[in-house]
Length: 295
Image (cartoon, rainbow, N blue to C red):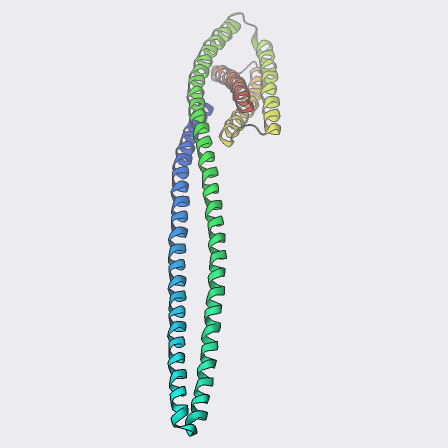
């Protein structure tokens, strides 16, 4: 008998285990990345604030220096005015220019103060962004915790799947023995081609049940892609064996049929019934998994 469908189910279970390991790795890397982004934002913000504070200090120092020079110049003008009346106009022009420079520097200081206020606003905005990032990180951490718990549940489910797989294998072997005994009894009773043909149609009705269950599950879309491939392959094998069985039944009606054809018919009957029974067990098992998912 063929266990091709069982092999594929075992392969799907291994794929699920690989997926669980990948999710664990992805969750760890995502947490590291979020933490690094938050640390980078804090470092950039600290450097930006320090540069703006240094700029403000330089402008305020320039303003104080200019005020001192202006006071000294005014004092000198007062002394010169009493001694050199002709130089008053020249010094007045210089005073005017210095006053203009002072106004320009004062404007720069005002601009610097305005920028400082903007920096305060930016600081608040950045703080809000940092708080938002922290909240996102907290949400992500909670999601990862939930995912971790789900992964643990998935691992337990995979363990149950393997146990159920072993049970199905034992059931298939037991069913194979029973079918072999029944078929030997059928041959001994010499019921011939008519009884075999009836067995074929009974088997076809059983296989139709498998197809109907498959279509219902496909419409509900409640299984993984690996499970879907296993069932599709099982149905494909059932269709191929049914077609071959039909040809052998027709051939057996010929009184000149050889012993090799009869033996081939026996083999196909056993394998077909095994696949049908296995497909039914898979459908029951998927229904069980569906109930777990709905919970």
